[in-house]
Image 1: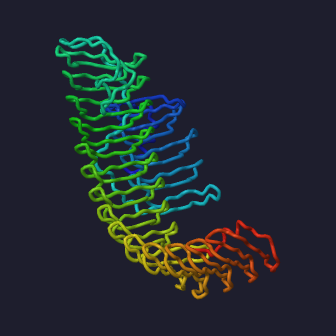
Image 2 (image 1 turned 90 degrees about the vertical axis):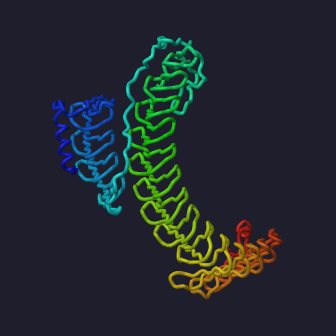
Image 3 (image 1 turned 180 degrees about the vertical axis):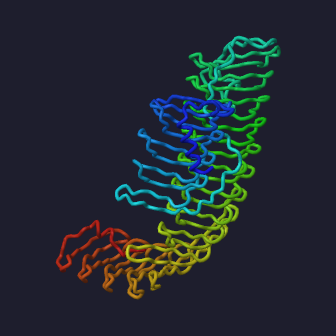
Length: 554
C-alpha cells in the first residue's frame, strides 16, 4: 500500500467516529483516556496486541494522531496534527521500522524531509537551517535496504490479572500449609529467585510435597507471586505482580522448568521483554522494548545460545546494531550505526573473531579506519583517515602485530608531512624518513633500534636543505650536541644533553641574532643563567622559561 493511499484511508477512519461496527474485524476496539485529556482508540487482537487502526483524539473529537499497527508493530502511514488541525508530521513504518518518506512541517512550511529503508537512513535528506531558512541536503546513499528477516514477537501492554487463589482452598487430598517466611525456592521468576520479605502459603500432598496452588504476599498482604505445583515440581502458569497490583511477569513451568514464552512488564504496564523457553532452555525469538513501547532488541535462541540475526534499535527507531550468531558466538555479518543513522562500523565474524575487511566510519559517513582480520587477529593492510578523509596512517599487520612498511601523516598548521619506515613485530626499526607534501622535500630523519631512537636525528625546513633541528639519541634519550635554527638559517638554541638531561652551557638567541640567555646545567640540574634583551642589553631572567627551554625535540 503506498503512502498516499494509506493517508487517505487514515483520513477516512479519523472522520468516521460513528463507523465502529466491523472496524476491527475479528478484533476488539479499545479506548483509553490520557492524562492530557486526549483519547486513544485502537484495534486489538483477543490477546490485547494492537492490530489495525490507531488514533488519538483531542478533547473536541478531532483526530490528532492517526496510524496503524500490524501484530503490535507500527506499520504503514502515520499522520500527526497540531491543535489547529495543521499537519506537523507525515511518517511511514514497515514492521515497526521507519520506512519511506518522513516529513515535518511548521505552520504549513516544510522543515525537514528524511527517507528510510527499513530503519536505515537513505536517499537525500533535507533540513531547513533555522536562521537563513535555506534547505541543507545530505545524501545517505540508495534506499535499497532489505526487510528484517524472521518473526518478531509484538510487545503488548501488561494484562489486567488478579490473583486466582483464595489462599485457603486446596485440592482434594492435600492440606493447606500455613504462611511462613520467604527464602525457599517456591517463588520467583523464570530465573528462580524469591522476593524478599514475603510469606508463602501452599498446599501439600500426602507425601509432604507441594501440590496445587501456592502464592506469596508482601508485608501489606498483597499477593506478589502466584503459581501451581504438581507433586513437588512447579507446573503451569505463574504470575508476578508489582506492589501496585500491576502485572510484572507472566510465564509457565513444566516439571520445574520454564516452558513457553515469559513476558515481563514495567510498573506502568509497558512491555520490557519476552523470553522463549522450552523445557528450561531458551529456544525461539526473544525481544526487548523501550519504555515507550518501541523495540530495543530482537533475536532468536537455539539450545540456550543466541542464533541467527540479532538486531538492536535506538530509541528513535533507527537500528543501532545488527549481528549474526551461530551456537552463541558471533559468526557472519555485523554492522553498527551512529544515532544519525550513518554506519559506525561494519565487517564479519568467524567463530567469534573478526574476519575479513572491517571498516569504521566518522559520524558523517567518511571512512575512519579499514583493515583485514583473520579469525580475530589483525592480519593485512590497515589504513586510517582524518575526519576530512585525508590519509592518517597506512601499514601492514602480521599475526596481530604491526610489521613491514608503515607511513604516518601529520597535519601541521602550515604544512603536511609524511614519515615512513619499517616496523618488525610491533617495534620501529631502522631509518624513518619524513618528507613534506606535496613537494617531496626532506622533513626529518630518525633511526630506531628495537623501538628506541638511536643515533643522528635531523629536521629540515620545507625547502629540504635548511636545517631546523639537529641532534642525536642514545636509548631513546637526547644525547650530545643539539642545535635548533630560525628559518632564516640563524641559530636559535645550542647545547648538550647527557642521556636526556641538559649538561654544561646552553645558549639561546633572539631572531635578530642577539643572545637571549646563557644557562649552566649539571647532569640535568639547573645551576645559573644570564639574560639579555633583543637590543643586547642585560635583562632579568625568566627562570621558569629557561628551565623549560631547550632544543625542540620532535
